[in-house]
Length: 127
Image (cartoon, rainbow, N blue to C red):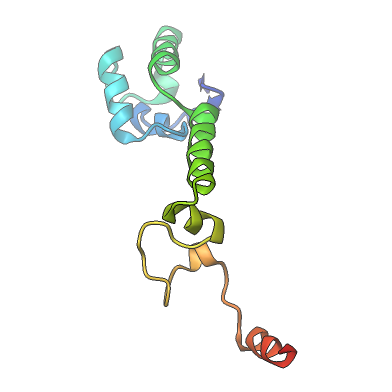
């Protein structure tokens, strides 16, 4: 099982799909990488030679932000938005949807599980 950027690529999948296991590389980027290294997109990861894996590894490390570096950049960008207290930063702080989605219904991914009527009644009693 080849290891690129600290991630084991799934051996049974085509290289184009296997590269998407790396955070920051999607299908389109994987295709660009394969074209620039001259590898067939239908080839399986287990069929790659050591030279091909090395070519892929060097290209990715040299030209793309991936894994930890990309995650830290995203985290810094979100913290910057929070620090300047812009609308998007406030939404991140409150744990609400950031990009204009409705919140009256839905938005359960960001808001978490529903608080039932019991929680609401307890709050009213305390007042």
